[in-house]
Amino acid sequence: MDGLSCREYRPEEAAEACAFTERIFGPLPLEDWVGEPNLTASMAFLDEELVGVIPLSLRSFKLAPDLVCTSAWENAVGTREDLRGRGIGTAMIRAAREFLADRTDLLCVYRGAERSDGYRFYADKTGHVDLCYIPFYRLNEPGNRRPDGYSIHPHQEVFARAEEMAALHHSHWGQYGGHVVRDAETYRYLIDCAIYGRVPATRTLHRIEVGGVTAGFAVTGIRQGKRADGTCMIMDFAVADGAPSLAARLLDGVESYAHGEGCPLVWPSSMRTPLVPLMLERGFERGPRRMEIMAIPVRPVNLFAKLAAARGGCEVTVDVWTPTVDYRLHDAGETAPRCTLELKDRELCLFLASRLDGRTALEEERLTITGPAPLDKVEQTIARLGRCMPWVHHYLDWL
Image (cartoon, rainbow, N blue to C red; front, side):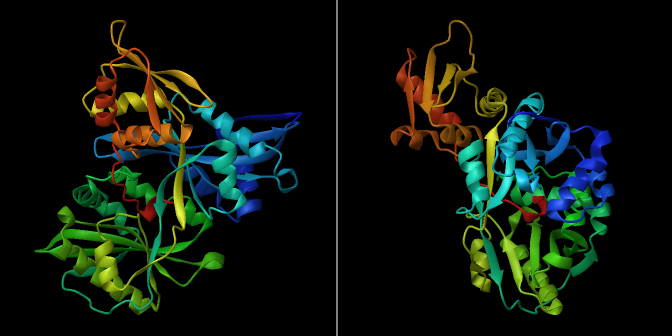
């Protein structure tokens, strides 16, 4: 589009950028925008007039137990109403990939409604790839069994208990990917992040104690205002070592809270969370895959280096060919054998995010190999590096 330019947000533009998103997505206090840690944005200007904004939250994201990447999360993606469908959103995302190239591995977004224009924008125009599906499990009639050692607290208590929460989360979910890396500072910003300025919710901390020591926790949210839906949502949940008996006791407590609030209990979770049997035993019904995480690689070379470092290294020089790009993914040195991986952009993204099984992809010819390197050596390397790791996502990360 003639006269269109896109670039990274500048801190002095906070009021203008926040006000622009408010006109599309509803009120957001400026202090919440300014207070969001590691926030930037992609901005579009038409003849120097602001016509588009994509806020971007930078977060450490766990792809696998041994693999953490830097990620930027798009939210409140908006263009001026009379200019939609003219490529402004695509141009902002293209600009974001350029100005984030020195600090971000993946550009991510939450989406739903796979038959919608919004989903097709990401899938068809920008090349985002589905990495994880998040169905919502629903219990219409929560039980009323309040266990011993159970207590509830306002969400501000998270600030004081952030370290123990991070330790419990790692104890339960350390062998899974698919979520923002938890430490004390993470909890302190997740519990009060900018989304609650736009989508107000009563957040509650639930604890279960054993011998006077916190052995598990959950965070729930009940939306308020225009987006209130009358449900109590489980946003985070962890018990020591993932112990089933502790999980059952903590869920008893959360159910009793929802019962007292007169709310159905909704638990957004991943397709293969190990807590599914407990949910089904309690009568939760799984809904359709209501939401997904989508992403595109920003620094594929950096992602591959992290992946190789975590899984025994790579002694083969690897080039990549897709229908849209070809480049060197990994240089193992002048004397190293060389190969080219041939695959679709989608499979490349899945491979780099630890969501593609290399051996299966080779067998199904979703990934093929050419070049002078011995085929058996390359296939063994790809099978070792390419793993489809189990992901468990927590709704507290959502924005």
